[in-house]
Image (cartoon, rainbow, N blue to C red; front, side):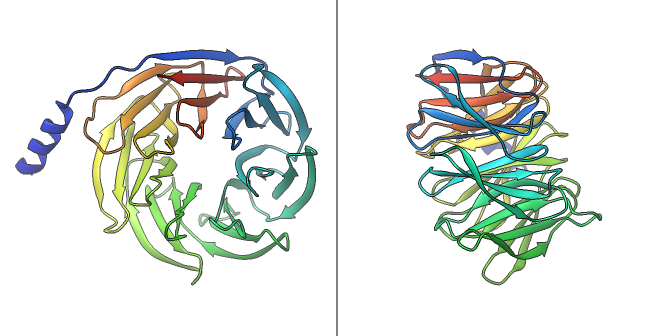
Amino acid sequence: MKKKSLVVLLLSLSLVVPLVAKTIHIKKIGELPNFVAMGPDGGFAYVTSYGTGELIEVDLKRKAISRATVVGIAPLGIALTDAGKTALVACKESGTLAVINLETFRVEADIKVGGAPNAVAVDPRGYRAFVTNFGRTKEGLVNIVDLRERRMSGSVKVGMAPIALVVSRITELVYVVNGGSGEVWTLDPGRLAITQKMTVGSYPVGIAISPNGERLFVSNSQSNDLSVIDTKSGNVLVTVPVGKNPFGVVVSPDGKRVFVVNSTSRNISLLPADLSSFEATTLPVEKGPVGIDVAPDGKSVVVVNEQSNSLSVVEIR
């Protein structure tokens, strides 16, 4: 314990390079917007509007909404696939996964998954989507969708209140956040089996993975911290304090930075992914930030502010 404390102290004393950030706020983004995905060229952001049932496209150069379309009742999680030409949106009250062609901006399919779908992630080859589903009992589900046939192909029972998930581009393993049990479960999609359960903080709600697949970053909303997990051992390497009620989390494409949205603090905590410092840089946004994504070049992030009906674009230099 003493040795670990000394390591933490030395790391926390490491030099933090100051950042210069410029933030703009784009207003009137639907009602109760929740989640966001950046397009592959970084020019557009796609936001789910829970209150209006829409997917909204925001032109980041013009700083304005460019298109919107109704996708279902109470849309939440979003993932892009097909080289950014298709969006998948989990619609909680519809019990569907909407498939949207981003060129025509029309819904091409509504795949029935049932229950209360919340978040969605896609495997590296773009063949399967994984959808967290609160279900109708204490146990939640991960529903597996065949994207080529556009139908649900199976499901796996997970823990209580599965909220978020992420897929490793290296191993194709799926990591599921179970908010109710304070755990992250590893799902092997080939075997349709849970292979590992990892305890994190209190009511985890967000997860991201490093590009090399070696570390998971899990935001714990009630303990106000970030758990960092080594994927090979399944051990929590360290737990880092962040702001109040952390939610969304994302890693920059180069694997060097981690961004955590703090909903009650109204800001973002920015940390080095290599844990060379535990002293976070904080970047203010607007009221009720929830979802976050990072541009392909890593030079900006977009944050959805649920209680402000806005999108914050933070340029980092």
